[in-house]
Amino acid sequence: MISNGVNSRKVIIIGSGPAGLTAAIYAARAELQPLLLAGAAFGGQLMLTTEVGNYPGFVEDIKGPELMQRMLAQAKRFGADVELTDVTRVDFSKRPFRVWTDEQEYEAEAVIIATGASAKWIGLPSEERLRGHGVSSCATCDGFFFKGKKVVVVGGGDVAMEDSNFLTKFASEVIIIHRRGTLRASKILQKRAFDNPKIKFIWNSAVEEVLGKDKVEGVRIKNLKTGAAEELAAEGLFVAIGHEPNTKFLQGSGVELDEKAYIKKQKRSLTNIEGVFVAGDVEDHLYRQAVTAAGDGCRAAMDAEKWLAEQESKT
Image (cartoon, rainbow, N blue to C red; front, side, top):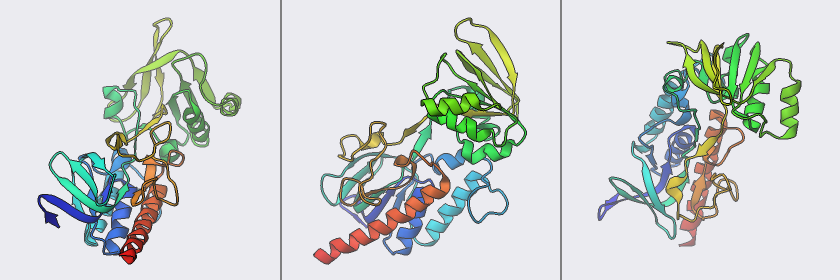
């Protein structure tokens, strides 16, 4: 409903990955007539994944973008409205909550934040070109596709060590490339990596180019101390230098964030603000899987439905 130029809804969902789309499906089925502000970059991290083999219900691998399109179609089938626009700021100081994009102002009785987290990349054109074709930021998602292959992992923190150890279940060899001479990872994860016979280290070095036309065939690295360059043959590159939660638009909103700017969850899917809920990787920096994000979206929508019913019963 639009009144005085403001689009008013019971529920607004911000974000369009598995968490946001699942929340839209459940909210629409509950007849909450949700509006999904999907963002200009629709679909989240799965839009960068060529093959998804671990999402339940698909015997054959499905391409990430196709899975997202199916979720979107399902949400629309149940009556969710979708706008491909980015939220620029919010006001959660009182209800109805207010949400803005560059083009429109919205109001909502409840809001579900499902904006996800973006992987940090090295920043190479060749890396971007080969994403989903041997370049990945998710070992647990894509490691299975590298059975018997040699892969490279970039990073020196906990995630890089965890990913490297995980990849040794499939890869024939894992080479960790780190810019420094020592690791930042916890001691126990360092020990596991050092003790793993499949893992090798290249220190004080950085990847300068990903080699290959249609798939990863190797990397060119540079020693940051000597300047010497060399090429390594490899069929996969896993970038494990961290993720950044998409929470910049929440500045000044009052939503409580942790030290890494992920949203803090209070009770079930509720944030510290009554009526504002969270789902997916914008809160979960441990699992970061499509199926766990979808489960979060389901919980957030059900929690929002229950909370709205409780508010209505008080009036």
